[in-house]
Image (tube, rainbow, N blue to C red; front, side):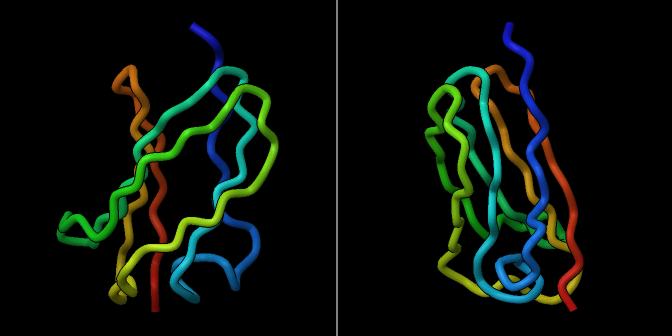
Length: 94
């Protein structure tokens, strides 16, 4: 199995979910990745789901624009990969 680089949280605040309606994913996969990106509120209600197709050695930033505004409070972001593993992080929208 190829080693997967961790997914980075957005570094540009105007593109992050607690300031606006879009998120930013910066990743350079060493193998083709087809993750599912999901966003949940603090009560684990699904707010957004999107499939991504990231080719090998693709170096770039992908904008993720959900159809709804995220509510205030804890927002959980999860990337689930084909093998069932996942990477996640939590943000706070004020």
